Length: 113
Image (cartoon, rainbow, N blue to C red; front, top):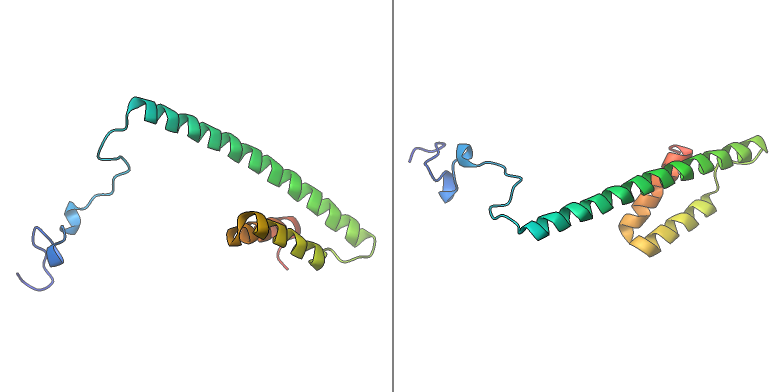
């Protein structure tokens, strides 16, 4: 084999790049009841997502109002101790990714520092 060239098995016995395809379908078919159940579960996830989005929008509106009231009354726009309590609560409930999610929500409500 010539260096840099692919055989039908490609380098080191792997398939040649043109033989590789990405597939989003399984090689075996799922039973109809499993397919139906997956569809039902995905609908539940979609409903949860819609509720989460609505709650986030509500949270952002409340947070922005708090920031405006704090600023209008001569205070700081944010409270770092309050933010830390929020992050701690998210971390305790959801782990390290929860703290990341909490930070994203805080940033959405107050903007970047």
